[in-house]
Image (cartoon, rainbow, N blue to C red; front, side, top):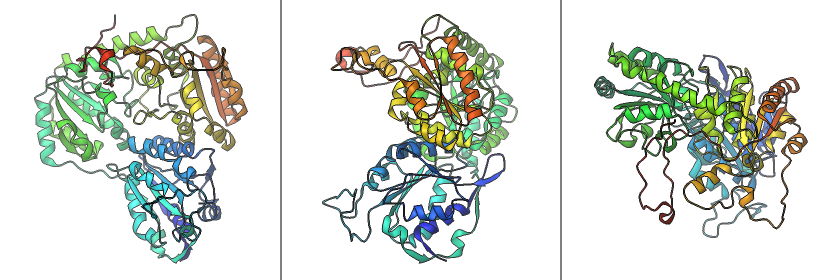
Amino acid sequence: MKLTTAQALVRWLLAQRSETLDGREVPLFPGVFAIFGHGNVLGLGTALEEHRDEIPVWRGHTEQGMALAAVGYAKATHRRQVGVVTSSIGPGALNMVTAAGVAHANRLPVLLLPGDTFVSRAPDPVLQQVEHFHDPTATVNDAFRAVSRYFDRITRPEQLIATLPQVARVLTDPADAGPVTLALPQDVQAETYDFPESLFAPVTHRLLRSRPDRRALTEAAGTLRTARRPLLVLGGGVRYSGAGQRALDFAERHGIPVTETTAGRTLVPHDHPLHAGPLGVTGSLSANVLAGEADVVLAVGTRLQDFTTASWTVFSPDVRLVTLNAARFDAVKHGALAVVGDADAGLAELAAQLESWTVDPSWTSRASAERARWDTHIDTLRAPTDGVPTYAQVVGVVNDLSEPRDYVLTASGGLPGELIGGWRGSGAVSMDVEYGFSCMGYEVAGAWGAAMAHTDGLVTTMLGDGSYLMLNSELFSAAFAGHPLVAVVCDNDGYAVIARLQTGQGGQAFNNLYADCRSNHASPPRVDFARHAESLGCAVFTATSLSDVQIAYAKAREAAVAERRPAVVVVRTQPDSWTEAGAWWQVGVPAHLSGAAEPHPTQLRHLT
């Protein structure tokens, strides 16, 4: 078939199918986010227009925002569908690098198609081209190499035949999932080639369930049998494997308390008797207390990031670590006994090896006992008070008024700690806290993508004023496209969580809260978030008290669904009230502030 490079790429996208965790067949690439420029409007843009009825193309307003929306879409579909994002060359392309970093850190698939300079070099240097004096083959798109799982620059049309199977491999491989970048020089996009029809044959990509090595399973089972106080840690890999129920069955069969990582949050029903709560710095004291006493930890589908492990102080120094992970890279970390394989298949085979082994009931019962104490603490934080609401109180309102199939999202600042530590889920996987890269602005853009994918419930995103100002343009994208969501904007006058870190470690308040920032005005201006969001096409509701928040959020939910557009709740919140999980996090503190060159050993602060 004689096609341009761009036409061939679009036909290939259309031929790729995916099987969801519940067995439905859906497009692997459900849509394209596009901002057109001279690097992609005529090549890829023309090819997409020819198939406009077969693959939706959504107009974004920042390239970073579009790409973050694609990341949010992938998370909401549990990595079973992949967003495609195309930009022009130069600044448009580079705007997507941050989003590629988000996808890479969180192991989420996204296909980035930045335009590139002319391979022919005939008009060299072309508009928006950055010239590299030492290397004429280099372009700004080489910046993507550091944040891509797979990178290629298509300099000949026929190169698609070799590279597209690799693109599909990376985007659908549980062990290797992440961003793929195909740089597309604008002249090559328009060149034709006689492509084989077989390149466009329909393909359905099903979840790979690799089985663990039998010897590793036997060793892991032997280690668990010797445990008196085992702990099960569930990460994002459990979610992407669809292994949540398998993990609960495993825990119930053997009597093992269960905790969750950030990416694994809401896998376990909050009131499950084995649920000890979320683990780590932004987790819960209940889970952290059990982690400190555990003698064997079985970590499934997690890379055990520093917030999860409290910089590796949450576990006992002599704990034995067993990991089950689809990626060997993650399984072997920290001297763990590595079991490499799919979470669902691995837990099933490990349970078969353990047979009727169970834990002492006195340890099993610790999960619900410790979590009950944590729940009481959260209830205290959420209790109504007079004055400016706290983050915990606002999260409590959203939690109470949300439906079981709804979806809540956040990314940066203080809200991850409130959602991870305090949210009470029903067991449906219903949370996306982007805390792998903690990208400010993901809260709006990622919510747009999640709202496209999560159509059987309402998406609510929670963010601070800093994140709103960082990247808010995709509110208009969602309003224009007709994708309902609710955004709860908590205005606490600046980067309050970093101010807390700064002053809490002995530093002086400086350049975080607006009161501590330089200005040439005696009374600097304030942002009117309500009027701004309204100007972007959103329904807007304001709140000054906790009762106002309840009324405003309920109205926002109704408006978003009825009017098919974002609804924004703006509420003033306290800048110095936080949910503490009683864990330590290692940061670089100058010796003259800390009084010590080495970090102090962690000591859990028991709540009174």
